[in-house]
Image (cartoon, rainbow, N blue to C red):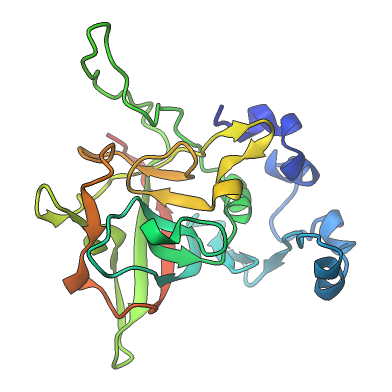
Length: 258
């Protein structure tokens, strides 16, 4: 059950945003629920999570928390940091720094999957409904994975080197395929939207955002030979900046999906 709009009535977490995610409000409008929010200090003292507020930056640029997005290009950007650079098996490219599996993720971010999902819906990204897991025939042989040609995205990273020079590239260049002994292949990322279990959006519970080793609890999954193998992926150490380097992650639509 991946499609948010079909399950909105079951998602208590997203109820207050249902009218917005259905396309009924324009970008730049502060949600009524947000306008009535308590001061952050009072909300935190009461054990409440602050409701995200959308702020207009320019004609096409908007912000929600630490996420910046463009309604025209549909580009989404958010900050992260390099979390692993050693010979450690990777299962994730990006996780939430508070609840994600940091010991298995290349990057960590303070951005919540909940907020990122809202932005994806505002920008009308359509998740793929393809199966995250391999399927098998009656003899136990793997079947070719089906695609609905939806959900294609590119994921890039930008950072500054030790001299302050701006650098950028594909996140795949930072991930090693140990079997092929080269960087992760390009055009692998699919927005799958993840799953809802007992009314709970799994990425918000698990902190999983981008999975190299495919996960039903991640918002984005890699679809490549080996992406169903949890012993193949490692940081590509010689191509990485120093551990802890601030990074900006960018998500863009990829119209043609294999």
